[in-house]
Amino acid sequence: MGGLMLMLCIAGCQNKEDYKTYLHDPRLFSQTVHELNTVVMGNNFPPMVASRNYAYAAVAAYEVIAAAYPAQYESLGGQLNGLKKPSLPAITPDMDIELATLLAYMKVGEMVTFPEGSMQVYQDSILNKARSLGLSKKVLEASRVLADSVSANIIRWSKKDNYLETRGAEKYAVLKVPGRWVPTPPMYASAVEPHWAEIRPMVMDSASLFDAPKPIPFNITDKQSPYYKEVMAIKTAGDSLTPEQKHIAEFWDDNPFKMNVTGHVMYGSKKFSPSGHWMSIVGIAAVKANADFATNVYAVAKTAIALFDGFIQSWYAKYKYNTVRPETVINEHIDPNWRPYLQTPAFPEYTCGHSTISSAAAEALTSVFGDNFAYVDSTELEFGIPNRSFKSFRQAAEENNWARFYGGIHYHSSCIVSTDYGRKVGQYVVDRLKMKK
Image (tube, rainbow, N blue to C red; front, side, top):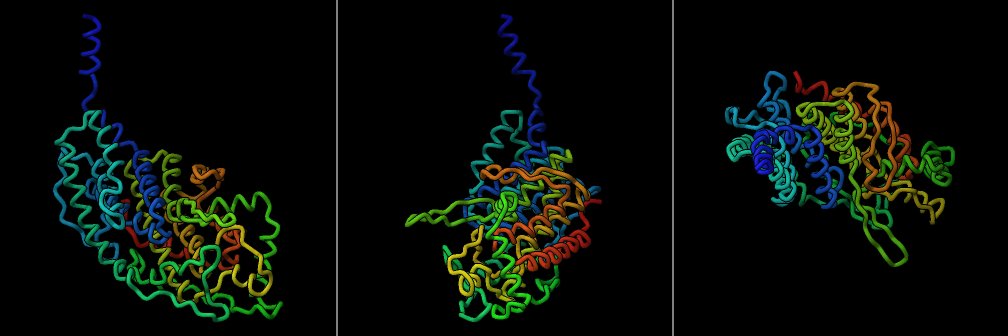
């Protein structure tokens, strides 16, 4: 009898709202961002396309928060290019705002680029656990109404950003012109997203708002020219990298699809893209700051928007100047057998996309968590690369400069310019957007 009573007490004493403890944990939102990161990685999306998934998903999540907490957060409707304030259902007590936020993030994250259902298994796992902790059908349905309404507005908006139109755009013309980009080994892949600057920015009024200066003029014949000195600097560094320099290069490599060649065997290996790496950093910072759920969503959204516009700014410069990669120049003019420490990405050298978006993200994160925010970045640990520690987000972005130089894929002067212009983009996003009141 006593055992039966104990069992009944355990069953009956479970709080019918235990699901809130689970769903309202900000770490669950970070885990969901990581899940989208993993799906993006599995689909081999290049970094700028990945940033599109993160940005639209994050804006959807943020708009749920803004609708539920208007005294604390301002809607991005009317602030982001082309995004109108939607007509949303009234917020009711039956709605679980955190659940609606998760549902909107997952729905938009997969539908922007993926086939519908790409995150279904993960979503089912969240809902099944929440149900086991007391989530009712009534609360789920009410929350889904809000999530679906926000998602529909964001998906409509996303379809007008010129992404589909650029899918059939003219391909990059490979021309044997001195100083012009050509495909690089081992894949000799076609130029990636040569029309990405035609994508609608979220905050900038155009891709050319922050127009980077012309790169150093190509001149490999004059050993006293600035260009020749840049070439020799990157070759010399690559020929004598220290273990620490190699670690820095590997840590910020973020190559979403590396082609490995061993004899006659070729196979690909995947990691998070640069934008995925910074999405992970947001989650790490949120835990370190003990941020609540809404603040976590706010930080992810602001950072994702900065990343998105940062890629557009950099890609405008890349295909405006079409600059050749160091590997090509060194192979043709100095050493035919030289290879950079990292695999060269399939797009022009100037400007550096990773340096641009890293400094843009650093500005967004600094505006949320403050400067001199020390943290340990464990993003790459799941790929077998040890952690690195930073005193601030800006320090991390500065280290990225050296990472691309040590990797042998960007001249350091290019990275310096890129960091400067990425900072301009990030600061512009911070200054223009009114999000947290």
